[in-house]
Amino acid sequence: MNLDGGHYFLTVLSPVRVEPWKDNDGNVTSPTSSLRQVLATLPTAMQSQACEAGGRNSPFSRSHSTHFARFAVIDQPAFNGRVPVDSLVDAIRKTNLLEDQHVDNLSTSWLLLSVDFDPAPSHASDNDGGLHDYLVSLWNVMRDELSAVYRHCYGFETVGTGDEFAHYIKRCQVETTMPFNDYWITTPPFLSRSISIPMIGAAIAIFTLVVTLIVAMVAGKLAWLALPVALALGIYGAYRYVMKCGEVPFDTAPFSDLRSVLKSLYLQQNFARFAIDHQGDDPARLHAAFGDFLKTHRPTDIESPTQPPGVIDTDVPAADRVSPSVRATVPAAAMANSNEAPGVTQS
Image 1: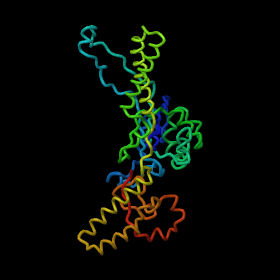
Image 2: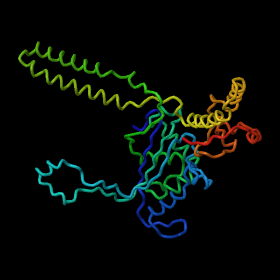
Image 3: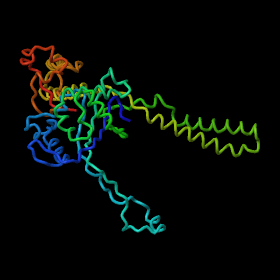
Image 4: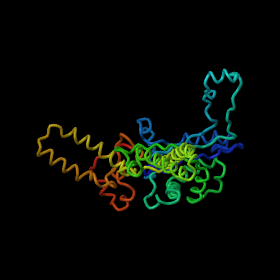
């Protein structure tokens, strides 16, 4: 289930080359080793003091729809020991526990890319759930970094545009079978579109009774055979119905898109400061100060002022607190003179 709760969960596995490779210094090495060096140079989000000291933000922070992104190199599947079997079964089968079990081996290393992002509303209903549009936009903002990483993988040599990159990633995509979505703060409305368990039980009983009565009318003596068959069919039908309902993605949680989350984090931090600064104020002064807070931080405006992606616990210039769609329309002098408090966290 790649699309769930209004978010797209992308999982990509790309085969890494195996032939000798020259790194940026001209040294011959393996593609896997060179790939690891490139990944090691990519900055992570500025979400710790150590990352802040470097002064470089993750290139994925340039995308204002990316919640989470991670690269990893998989050399071989992890060995978790023998497949567990009941000891009594092993004793009956006389299993030799010293004999090796089959272990999977990969013919090459694989590059894993895992991304959670917001599909563009205008493309969320596309056949691919807005994946193509997102990949093109991602290529447009971090083409150099993506090229430096994926040039170590088979099939990427023909990629030169955003469309070609999107098609390449789709060829390497695997289904995300267990997406993680943590933005529902209330119970999702999944019960409103499904039948309750008592109703399912009643439907099974009615189906079994109707089939049994029909068989009894047609072939009376075979009615006792129809009862368990009808019951089994009813249970199987209910099972298929429940599984089908389970495949339906959750609705989009309120305010769960990245822009709303960043705005919430921005407000959370600044309201905490406001509460500290105005401890002990009389009602009139507190009321006036809160009015100024609303005018300054505009809680209903998710575009500006807001929290930029990829930073935490750091002072951010006023220009960076305005989203890209608004920044182009705001005079630079106005942003430079702004006294709005910075946001400091990233989703």
